[in-house]
Amino acid sequence: MTEENRVVLAAGAGGPEVLRLENRPRPVPGPHELLVRVHAAGVNRPDVMQRQGNYPPPPGASEVLGLELAGEVTALGEGVTRFAPGARVMGLVHSGGYADWALVHEEIAIGLPDSLGYVEAAAIPETLLHGLEQRLRAGRAEAGRDHPDPMAAPRASARPPRCLAKAFGATVLVTAGGPEKLHGRPRPSARITPIDYRSADFVAEA
Image (tube, rainbow, N blue to C red; front, side):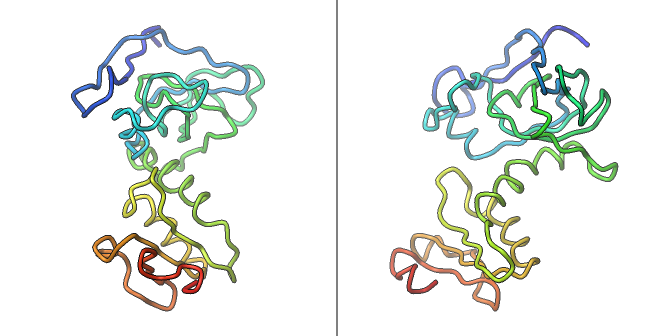
C-alpha cells in the first residue's frame, strides 16, 4: 500500500479537457471511516456539472471529483465494526471517488456479493440507491413520482427507480417539459403515466 494517491480534478471550468491527474497523499481514515482501494468509480451528471463549474461541491468536500465508487477495504478508522480489511464494498462519497484511494463512512458502505463486479457496483450507489431514495418515498398503495431533477440525467438515473417502483406495485407518474422530452419516455400503461407538465396541470393529472 503506497503513500501516493492519484486523483482526478478539474483545472478550471470546462469540458473533459480540463480534467487533470495529480498525485496527493493517501488519505487516512478517521473515526468510522474505511480506507478503500478504488477499483471503479461512477460518472454522474453532478460530476459533469461540477467539472463545468455549474455545481459547487458541498461544504467540506475536496476538489477531487467522484461521488460513487466500488473497491476493497484496506484500512479501518477507529470504531469501525461493520467491515474488515479485504471486504468488497460500494458507497457514496461527497467527493474523492476519482482516485486510487478514497474514504467511505462505514454507515454508507454496502458490502458486495460475490456475483457483483466492481464496475457494475460502482454504477449503483448514486444512480440507483440515491435516485431511489429521492424519487420513491411511497408505499405500495401510493404513487412514486419521477419529477424533473436538474442534477440527474432524465433517462439514466430515473429508469432504475421507475422499474423498482413498478416491481413493488407503485403507480409512477413520469414528467417532462414538452412533447420532445417525452419522446422515449414510457408509453401510458396501468403502472406508468407520462405527463407533459408544461401543457398539463400536473396536480389535476395526478
